[in-house]
Length: 257
Image (cartoon, rainbow, N blue to C red; front, side, top):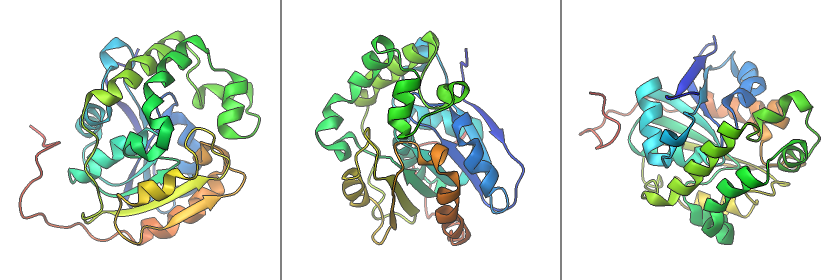
C-alpha cells in the first residue's frame, strides 16, 4: 500500500515534467510517452497514495504531489489528473499544463460531471478488466498492461471509490484563464469517458489561444495508446515554455514549510 505520493524521475534533458494519471490509472502508463520525451524533458512518473486515507479530492492531492515532488516546469495530466494539475498551476507550482482527455471542473464534463462520484462504485462493483480497458483505450490492451489503464486490485478499486466520493467535497481549482500559464489540450475523438465536447468547456477556463488538438482514433488514454503522436504535439510546446515569472507575492497554497 502506498501511503504517500511516490514518483520516479527518468533521465533526460530540459524542463522537469510531472506526469499525472487519472482517477484509477497508474502513472506507469506514461512510460512510453516519457521515453519519447527524454530528449527534451526530464519526466517524473507519479503514483498516487492508496487506501482509505487517500480519500482526498484534487486540491488535497495536489498538496501531496507538491510536497513529494516540489515545483515543476510543466505537468502532463490525464483525466482527473487535470484537476490536480490546475491546482498546482494556479498556486504557481507549475508553469505549464498539457491536458490529455482532461477537465479542471466536473461541469466541463457536461451531464456526466454530476455523476462523477459513481466512478467509485463502478470501479468496485463493475470490477474493471480487459474489456473496460479496451473500451477506455478504444483498442485491445495486452492483459499484462490492463492494470496501467484501469484499477484491477481490490485496493486500487477501493481507493478509486474513496477518491471519487471526495472530489465534490472540496472547491474546484481556480480558473487559469488570467494566469501566466502555458497550456495545451489533446483529446481523443473516441474518448467515451471524457467526450470531445469537454475540450471547448475546458478551454474557456484556460489562457486565450490555448492550442486544442484532436487525435483521431484515440480514446481516453492517448498518452498510453498514441505516445508518438502525443510526443510530436508536446515537444514544441515544451520547447516554447516561457521563462519563470517572478511573482510579486506568494500564492496562498502549496508553500513548503
